[in-house]
Amino acid sequence: MIVLGSTGSIGVNALNIARKFDLNVDVLVAGNNIELLNKQIKEFRPRYAVVANKEFAKDVDHTRTFYSQEGILEAINLSDSDLVVNSLVGFAGLRPTIESINCGKRVALANKESLVVAGSFIDISKITPIDSEHFGLWYLLQDRAIEKMTITASGGSFRDTPIEVLENATVKEALAHPNWSMGKKITIDSATMTNKLFELLEAKWLFDIDNLDAIIETKSIIHALIDFKDGSTTAHIANANMQLPIAYAILKKVDERILKPVDLVEIGTLEFRKIEPERYAIWEIKEEILKKPHLGVVVNAANEVAISNFFDNKIGFLDIAKKTLRAYKEFEDFKPADLQDIFQIDLQVREFVNALK
Image 1: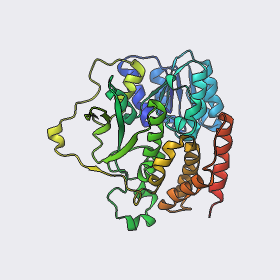
Image 2: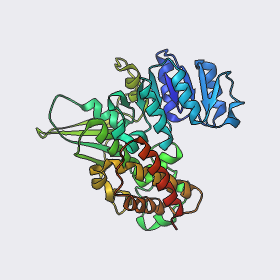
Image 3: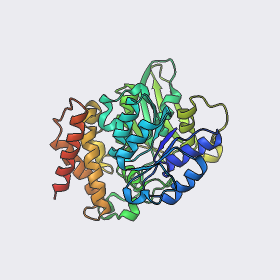
């Protein structure tokens, strides 16, 4: 396999599965965590390695090391592997997804932005989702008429914080997720609920369904639910660990234990909450954007810039959603004709948001 983002949590879990089932790893792509990458290279002996910048390449213990996005695309083309695990963060994951599909490879996709920004131009038949929510929906599918699909959210760092104090929330507070440790961007996206909005858009493309929703389940034990037209509902319950969806994406069939089963008696109780726009302002466009999923590229670009501004202490936490919503309104008439339009509007939205006061 090719692992894009090998030093992140999903990449590390993909390599855990590779180790468990003695699978070949042909390419490792990392950012700037060279120490961990070198350990992975020593263990898995990939044919190629890729890092984010040229300055890091000299420190990589591999004779065939590429760098930058061009290096990622080159490694994908050179590799004989037919599976790409794409766990890159943000818009940067789009070109590798497209290139992988163009090369005839399957994509185990954790880079949700690929579908959020360009779902109408991606061959979904080549995609296997490894987000726990979409894996859960896939796992629940039966040969029965579906009424509705629902995914769950943790509620993020500020789910229990009084709304009136969010305006002064710090970066450190926003990164303190109540359930687990994730990358910085996705932790902020969880706190604003933008991550869940993106997952609904992803589900729309993956399952071709309009009736979608999300709710908060505070213990992150239930990942997805399906309402069937007969009135029954099924839920996917599992301990939160990405190795299960990754194992299915890579192996297609899994007949041995990957996770410890959930002990419901030990869990005791579950709590569900509605996602309210008063706390999660981005949620006010949920219904509209599901009818206009092509506008996902606008929301993604604006959100990425706003989060960067928040990390640089240029704006407050609540301004992330405010700037994203302003961009959404500004570009609501955008309709892409091709992938080139996607890349062009991405740049335009970023310029717009950076210019906002």
